[in-house]
Length: 328
Ligand SMILES: *Cc1c(COP(=O)(O)O)cnc(C)c1O
Image (cartoon, rainbow, N blue to C red; front, side):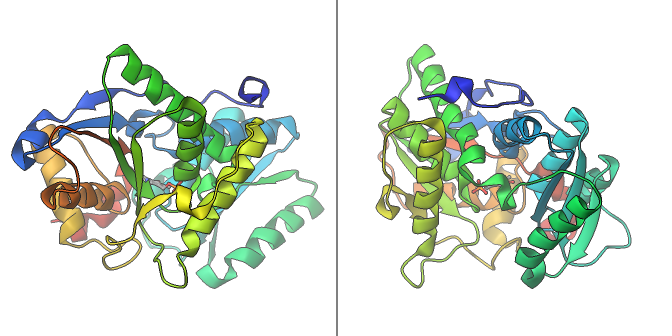
């Protein structure tokens, strides 16, 4: 493997802490619960994109780019963290956001503006074309754009989560604890793909459960194939000789609720429970849903009482403020 020699720009505060969720575990009964605090990675309020951006920005700088271009939802955590990374390293940032400009920006969008990103409002159906046209236009203007895919989910970005898995295994070794299940939100796939590659690199024996936020399992569960593609690209990028297939990924498809970014009781109750019992803030789109899934899995006795379950907090709390009307 050649992880040490890959281009990387330090942006994250690592390792992120592992904490015990004692009150929550007591209330739910059953398994011991741990939480890995990737909401505390640093970089403009943190989140899972920081680890990916270390490698993406590293490659952008190596290629002599002067502008980062990426796309996402109006409340995209990935776009906010990309804007912050660009500001930190002195690059320009151009964001393609879904929808129309609101009268007053809030949450991640407010941060995008403060961080100095240039925002282009588009329709979701235009995304693929605009992700090609905007860089072409920037090149014509004499810029050197570096395009980051949605969620930073390619082999370069997912490399951050291979190392996150190495970090987890080292931390568990140091405190002499075993984790049987890891539960986390999965959407554009780089996090899950990187973790699965990392589990193979380290020999991690626990089960990784990606809670699908927005992909369903109709038509042969295409998300599994996307995850395998990203994992294979990652293995190749880091020089790790392994092949991944769709059935190497556990995806929980039962928690799609009202769809992407729609807050229902599952998310609302999980957010309130973690806030009121543990003083931990979840987000309305990803961690509220994946923690809701974890709670449901515990209540349905998906785990044995002598097993330890780790919730991997992937960040996102800035979006809470933009969803206030759905949470109170
Ligand atoms: C992007 C994001 C995820 C999903 O990670 P992917 O790598 O896109 O699957 C989970 N949680 C939060 C808070 C995110 O912003």
